[in-house]
Image (cartoon, rainbow, N blue to C red):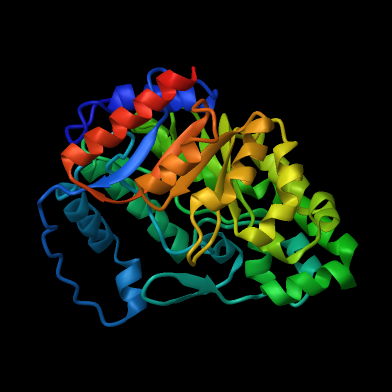
Length: 359
């Protein structure tokens, strides 16, 4: 596949495919922001409400196009758009409504008991999912040869049940009806494929690789496995309910990267690392003053288990501190900050030297 906005696209994709196998062609993948010197053109908004703005398909693609036109795409940073109505979009396919803020949305819970979901199946012919479909198709049409269209943010398994039930009520269900929770997780696990394939088939038919809301990319099926809710439950509860659903989901994919969100999720890391089909971990250490270098022992645990790592560094100094303690094979450096083209070239040269020195 060729992109006018990124002539080295295939070379970078080859580098990423090697990363999935914890291998290196010349250097690990690197994602970083580069200043292009161009400002995005203004896209006028004339919406009567936040809901109207979020649901405006043409406006969403216009904004994406303006951003991409003004962008600079260096190394494994790609021009990309993913359809987005917030992280609880899947709950709307069971009858939940969405409420919108400036930057995100959340679902209005509809389950009075966790076993209510056992009589439910996802219906994709809904107004919200229709918007996701139309965003996908319009992005594929207008972005052909210019940008990648990704799959929307699918929060399934335990996160889907929390969205339908309410997180606090769902947490109480683990104490009040543990078998009901187990049954609910087993019931909705296969629904992941319904959501994923509905988008993936459109993207694959357009001849594009698979991408997501994050930085990963693959010529096959790939996605971030995740469940943010697990911060609220014990390892035993997780392993007997939500983990089997996650294992079922990743079995449908060629590659999977687990989105481990926040220190509260670290108690489940060993169970996640034990899953053979998890290829990598995206460790999100949370807001505040912490840096990637504060979590070197976590990254080392992940490497020792034979998994890849998506390292989100605050800046190059932070990335450098992490690099000193890791093997380059299987590391993807996502480096914060904004760089000039010359500074970006220097970063890539340093990462290449790191790879050459450690092999």
